[in-house]
Image 1 (tube, rainbow, N blue to C red):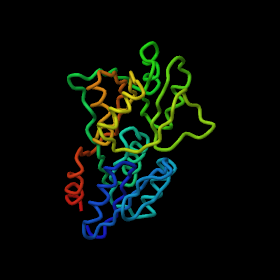
Image 2: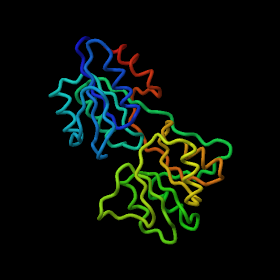
Image 3: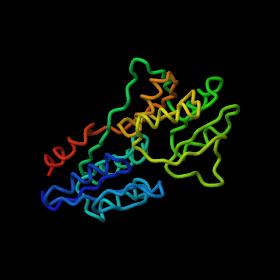
Length: 248
């Protein structure tokens, strides 16, 4: 197949790298799609669209209207709804879909993890367990912790919450990864953090906080990943282009 169109569902640094690699294949047009949840997203090079599709039906319409030949799902591991929508939409229009599923972090010797199934469970796990918490679960999840009393939160987000958003007591820190180990260690010590709450996102960009917690003996409430749809998947960026070439 020549002049193929590839839709890359993005929102991560891995997606930007995948888009750049796909764009170098002769006869292939790469279109990177971002949900637009952050105000100043990292924009991949090449063709980019920003915004949602409107569920499965909207994605089906887009795939048909744009004559998309392949979909590569490189969304965040916790953006599960778009992954399930992509699986349903590509099945409906009968085009190949690849899920890029970067490996989750694994507990190693020295880690003090409390693994939970959801953000709600993470909030429940803090009761009588923590006093000063480093909350690194994203702006949209802050309200789940707002009801907790007697806990101070350092909330790191890319964009600040809206003025009317429900947030727990503490300090909002706006920053974007990747984060260096020295930086993470300094934050934990400076703010006297005794617990980190994190999603198990995998990858290197935010893993330094987990290393710093291990070094300092700080407990981590780790939210497990949601289920992913069945289908072809790879865990390394390097494996995406070979998959695409084998299907052209």
